Every structure is written in structure tokens, then in C-alpha cells.
Amino acid sequence: MPRLTALVSAAVLAATVALPSVAGAQSLSPDAQARILDRNGETTGTAALTQGPHGLLITVEMVGLPPGWHAFHIHQVGDCSDPEEGFRASGSHLGLGEAGQGLMSPDGPYAGDLPNIHADEQGRVRVQLFTTFASLTGAKGPGMTVLDEDGAALVVQETPDDHLTGPAGDGGSRLVCGVISQ
Image (cartoon, rainbow, N blue to C red):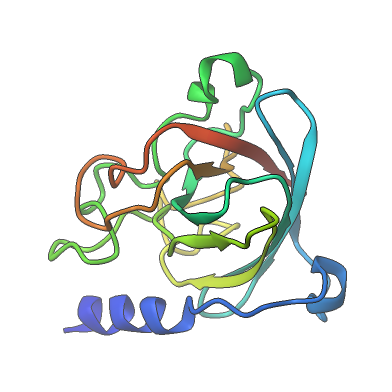
């Protein structure tokens, strides 16, 4: 039952909120950040990550995405150096193999599974997400730590995550990637 409670808490707390800007939305000093790059190597957004006592708050602002819903995940490796290869260097979702795939999986999600995000008609995303499954510092355990030896990355895919299909939720190609750093 505690796992189900954590899953429900993550799903409820991960609701999106329209924000004026990452800086304006982040009243706490972020513990980590990411500069998000498109496949041309151009900066397309930023993310601020703040570790809380019960989970990780992620505040994101991006531009230039195709309008509509997109999968959004934390990936295992802090490497976005291969945009021409579709950011494959960022590896799989954080926590791959630790649980099932997707927020709706009966086996629980991977630590890197996050709710889908929506780009408006101008391709803008402003969102604040919360997850209880990952942490910056290792408080959630091995495989769920963002700032470990090889780091982690935030990745947006071309279509929404179906929250069930392994290993990546059937989210299509990786569009943008941002290495998380302190």
C-alpha cells in the first residue's frame, strides 16, 4: 500500500501549472539546473531542480517544440552530446529495471518517469512538476539519483508517453535534451 500511496501522490502532485518564467516560479534557490538543447545544439529552454524533503521539484520553460503533448523524462546519463543521433547518449530512463514503465504501471514507474507536458500553439512550455521517485542526492536509493557519477538529463520526446509501454512509453524520437548539473 505505501507504493500505491507514493504513486498516487506523485501523480496528483505532478499536475502542471502555467508559470510566467522559471525564475519567477522558483521561490526557492534551485539545487541543480539544466540548459535544454534542440537537435541543432541551440538552447531551447531551462530547468531548475529543487530537492525537497519528500521529492524533487522540476520547473521548466521551453520554446520551439511542436504544439501538443510530449513525453518528458529524466534519463540515466548526463550526456546530450549527440543531437544528430537523437540524444541516445543520455541512456534510458532513470531507474530502468527498478520497477515497471510508466506512471500507470501496476509495478510502479521508473524513477525517471514524469507526466507528459504540453506545448501551446507557439511551441512554448511552462510547467512545474513534482516527483517522489527521484532525488538529486540519493535519498531514494541507487538508480534513482540524478547527481550521481554519470549525472542525468531531462529529455522531451515527440509524442506523449502512454504511461504503460516499456521501456520508453512509446513517446517517439527524442527532440530536446538538457544535462542536469549543480
